[in-house]
Image (cartoon, rainbow, N blue to C red; front, side, top):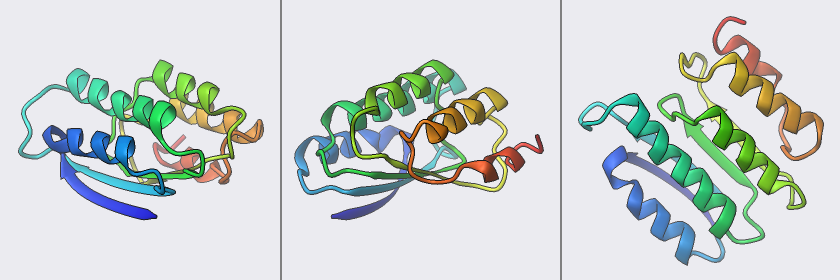
Length: 134
């Protein structure tokens, strides 16, 4: 089952429920809209990190593709922990859907590239190097 969601940050709890209860979920594409949401960047990062944790801990074994837009904010440490935890599962297609993203830093890109090189991620990530003009 493939699912695309366009939501506000405050509604991501519903996505958690889908991850917990949909045992045939294979692909998830989430676009977040922050425009009307209260909260600072740190709060947004915590919530986005929670979704990664839910994907890691509760997604079905056949889940293998996660796409997201430029409004996602992952902490560097949690992104690394997500890929470490994914090791041993079917490689994930980790699909950032953006041309430019100010908060997906060089450190984020290096982590994604590392896990692509190690076979944890199943999609070429070289295009990310142009996301912030690196």
